[in-house]
Image (tube, rainbow, N blue to C red):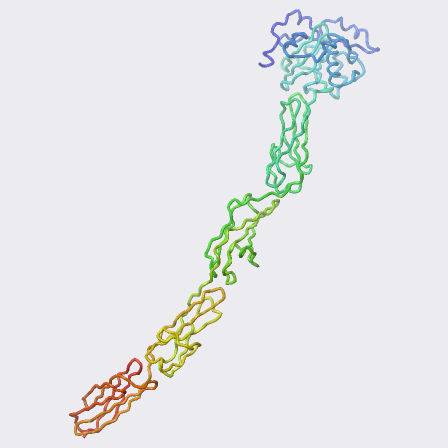
Length: 553
């Protein structure tokens, strides 16, 4: 129910007509007779009946509108005002009750009309709870000696509720609005009812960069106040920091923080209270949201790539340290990639990422380790090859080829028909009789620290053969020739195969037996002829053709 609806319903015309608000105060010794006889005057202030909320001690008490004990003490004089039902004595009583001494704070007349003019320094048009509402003589409802009342509540800048007593009348509470014509000439702020801080605001949370601090409003009396906030760092206001919470930025590092709450309530003076300072702001804490991770093949000559992960808040910088078996790799810092070198074979690789941000403690996170690094592998740029004539007695050499990376060492093993030849190593090989009929190749093995050895066989040579020698014996007969052909070859005890003997269009084929073949050519025309002897060759002996001059009888 609003205050206006609680207006005292029936107030008799007799009461209203007899209400006098401007009671004459007890004058000092020098006061005029007229002042001292002011109680004989008619009513000095008359409010409209609708303004009254209650009338009389009992009626007001029943409606919860007290008199602060004046009903029991109205037989006493306060600030030398007349006792009893008297506006000035009641107002003076309330000031003494608020803590002021029972000594009038100005000299001169005590009638209500003098209160504001005698105290101009503390009189204005601002209503406050606990102030004295003051009317000049003949202002609004006031009569010739003015009127004073005690401000109980400020509803708005244009409406107040007062308690008052009246000479020739009774104690009452009334509503006064600026538009009613009853608005006071001013408000005298002797000792306005204070708005007081009972409990200072308290900051909660850890004072570190990145954290959010919160503040209580503090405890206030009266409790229904409006509270605003202002945060400060080292005693200086933080621009824009006017909320109950404060996010601590890196600019606050090492500073102490306080919050000042300002309480306001209509009709009360504004008051502030400041919290105890926090400890000096600590560096904040960065957090790894997504752990860093490695990708790539864990093998020499391969590259591992680091995903540095995600962090909150976003770091200013990230540093990287690569690790082998958990120990820092010298010089392997900063880059998000690592080329795996031979010295890392067998080691597990990881990386530690350290995030940093101004005002925050650095935070590190380490990846899961990789699989152990396996040796690298060679690639063949140019295959090896065997150089030289594949004939007995000749020396073969090997072009070992080209590899990536370059080998530290190159070993050569000669092969006969794919089988290693005992003792046949080195860059060259002298062909011997054991090689006849076989194919020779070279096996090149390259080695390098941190790499798996690679063996590559060259293409094989043609079969190794020896050069034959042919000795021909002839016996001339009438119209025929007996021919004996003997074939020998270095490195062979016996040469096998066939020979073809051709003379004057007649040819005979003969198989070597222990290296010798015999043929008879007959029906030959007489005369000097050229005889051709052709050895067809074998797996071990080259073919050979020779000619001889023969005279046929």
